[in-house]
Image 1 (tube, rainbow, N blue to C red):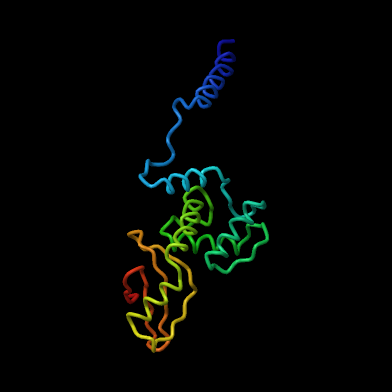
Image 2 (cartoon, one colour; image 1 turned 180 degrees about the horizontal axis):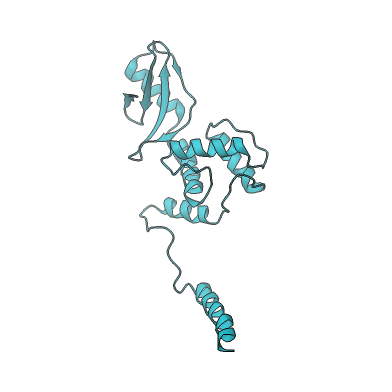
Length: 176
């Protein structure tokens, strides 16, 4: 009899405590940057998506990846193509590459959208031209990537020399 009462009382107390915020963990670190806090908070309100998911969230995910210059169709179905593109995005942003879209991947997608406005492909192309000269012909997938240290860059391939460069906001370096 006592066990039955505890089975009812304990979940009720836990539910009440959760609604009051007692004992709930803070899921993101405090940051000086208000945009970062908003991005993390927003990403935590979206569902985790994986292969087999079908929803407007999947359509939003696919559109964000397409806007970030990844080759993907927008159909609202999380299939093998979407999983592979998500993995590519995760690798490009130094995330664990499992093909599952959780809070960290949502946050990286949100941040990538802001970063692409602050550092455009046109700026990277112009910097490479200024540094290497206008006789170089560049090819690129125009995907904004993130280095291990968090620096953003575009990959540009110099057709004339066969060398690939990482073009950061203020400098370039050949890819080793």
